[in-house]
Image (cartoon, rainbow, N blue to C red; front, side):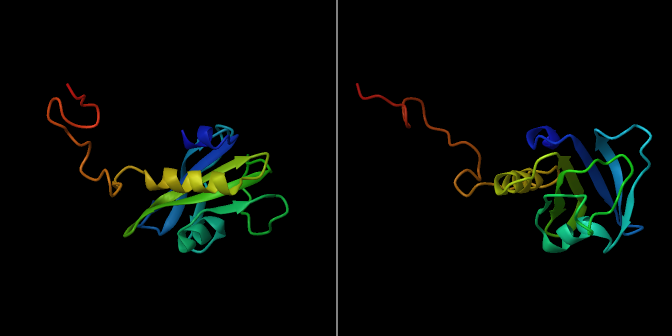
Length: 145
């Protein structure tokens, strides 16, 4: 779903495997069905750099950036790499690719999507306990007789 929101033509979800300490492509969008599983050892590629930075990394031209790991079936263009992690656990990385560069608004949207991942719950300070209930006839819509 996030690939649709970010207007991406391709997306790869790399899940973290703690046993092998690798990132492995488990879900893809827009890649040929025969694309093999892609694995990255710790420290290899921009996915691990995004994890270390705990932030989104944007690349405007994948063909010109030597830091990009080449994957069969992945076209050129721009990519956005978003780490998915809780304060104490790495879940994986989302890589989205499209023809035009990602801006700061896209990066902020990716951060927001990453912050809403399954298994974590963040509450807004004002809404942390759920919706406020008002007694019948009281509250913001109550009218004076």
